[in-house]
Picture 1 (cartoon, chains in turn brown, blue):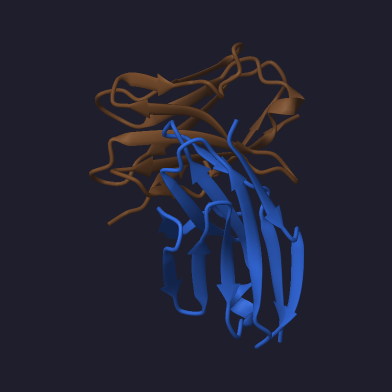
Picture 2 (tube, one colour; picture 1 turned 90 degrees about the horizontal axis):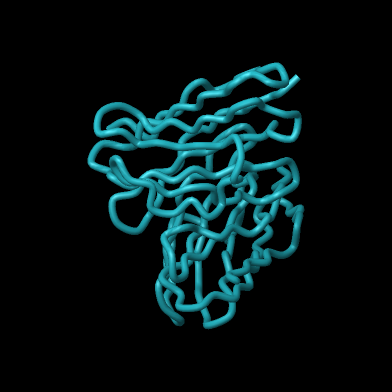
Length: 111
Length: 109
């Protein structure tokens, strides 16, 4: 039973480019969460999605960031016009009921 | 606003030297308290969920306990492979998890 799959594992983007991060939840899980981890800081909630619905985006920056979880395919976290401050590890988690299981993350570096 | 504070920030132990990590929290309506282990460059690995004060859970050398204000992760006779950052998180009125900054544990052989 495969765990939460994230790709790519590492992503380098120049300032102003777009970054697309993908997350395939565990089989049978219908809840997807995105978290961001900055160096020396804890994991910060960004957004919670179910299939075709954004349930809670209270942690998502208002500008440049968007997320989707389509009926078919992985969840996508999209960052437009990236800036140096977007450099971080982005983790996706999925759950069926209570426990959330995390992927290995995508490490985004903006140069 | 839900908050989680973990202490100490870092802890060095000798192999076999038992100790405890602390997680203090404030949350409106605790639905669950979670412990995760995170190795460098990896995602958090789920360890335990605790739901109510007085609850305890064990897994190998780890034991998690919960009161109304804090949780402890007790590590008995640790081994070098227990070295990692241990994260505590709470779930309150919404689905999101609020994490502490973690305790970095190093176990020397």
